[in-house]
Image (cartoon, rainbow, N blue to C red; front, top):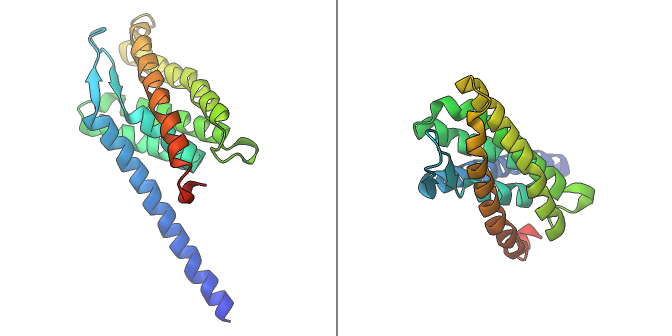
Length: 181
């Protein structure tokens, strides 16, 4: 009887902790996007380089595909909603959800749980074309023009390269902390 009661108590605690971690990751992605961004003067719609991509990569590598997808989609989607980019929110939610899922799925492949630097690097690189493609298609639909979205691709690439340069070394350091081992 005691064992059954202990299991029923520990499972909700685990679910609560899981919810708290996910909410914190969403907040970290949002804050990294809001406070650390630069609008690029490339075209009329420009593009935005921010550290939210690095945080998305970190969340996906440390916590896996589900939390990475949710953190990226919700965190950057909220940025679009509250940052004056409302029309971009649905596109961002899809693009960043897919990107976070891909990074986490590859980083956690074959039981590695984000512990392989090489696999983490591959994961982030493989996710880039998917993110770029979703934004390209979304922008093409928004502007009814398939040429204009090409101007956003350099900014997307810069943002992702910056994210990789920051996230992969940060994850190496964080993986040394007992919680993430």
